[in-house]
Length: 102
Image (cartoon, one colour):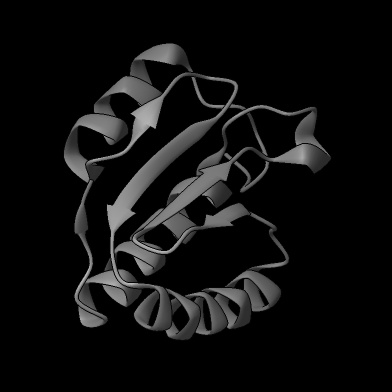
């Protein structure tokens, strides 16, 4: 299976359960409670990983939270292995910056 092959609904549900994210086969997302300055530092690191993976999450930064939403646009706006590769890296990055699940 390739990085941009769509994942089945069952596979997406299984991975969401273990990652702390939510969504379906079209997109996944997670909100974090984090102060603005820490969010900005985390987003800078997330951007570097996104560039490395050639994948682009949607990021919403507010004064006290960070929301990230992903789908693989290059696969027709579906959830793929690529999304979950980035999920794992994002979870590590935001945890390092003191974020908690919102």
